[in-house]
Length: 305
Ligand SMILES: *[C@@H]1O[C@H](CO)[C@@H](O)[C@H](O)[C@H]1NC(C)=O
Image 1 (cartoon, rainbow, N blue to C red):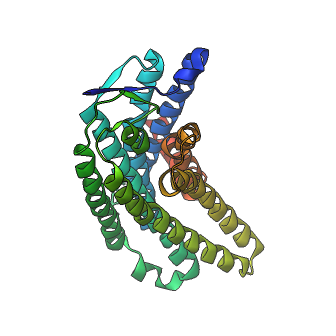
Image 2: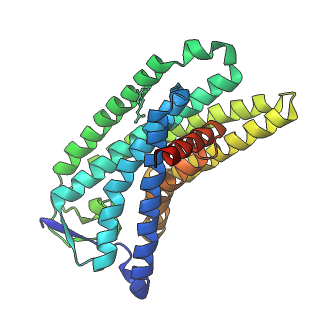
Image 3: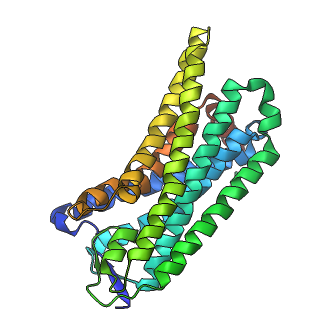
């Protein structure tokens, strides 16, 4: 076998075209929102602080992440699984997906730590978190995920495929690919579980711990309005973080029993499509300074026109 068929949602029949339109809208909104944030942070000097650098880097990551998954998925929805993807192409799609997802996990940890320092240790903020530190953290997260995913890529390239070529998924996800392999997959399964614990579970607990400390600090604040604002920010971040990590932990870390495939396919919609869509809305566009920057940019554009 040298080519795979991505079956996507073929069981859905008539729903293919409405789903195509829905996901097309999701893709356009994701790209628009994330590119807007990158442009705002790049052009507004008020936003040149670690927090906004993290947000812009997250948006940059999300645009790549969506562009890796959604166009392939849209083509497949349109042609109803009759289109093929080469085995190499599929392994590369999974490689980029893993690379970007692992970087995102570390970036989310960095962002929660940044908020932890800002809220719980405001006096040490400039010492603990400055542009140099944020650059190092971002570079570190990329190097780390490159290293981890090279191991997975190496193991995936050793796999042989001789059986059916239908992947029961809308993108080249690991488990459905492993199901089709006719060589031994025990090693790669073991390695991916270990790496998932390292790259998903561990960052998840760190992020959760930061937000728990932040929320307990906020509860002790004396000003009611400050408490409300900080609480609403943190709870929305926590929501996005759980939408991203929760399904990923179920799919990658928990034991894989047969019969869960359809549920896994549904759950992976959360971390492949919904997170990149909601991240810019929740992290940035609800933020007062980003809104001000947006208003200024729109006013400038108006004058220019
Ligand atoms: C990502 O972060 C680095 C370092 O903090 C920053 O210099 C860069 O501009 C950021 N990238 C984007 C796209 O904003």
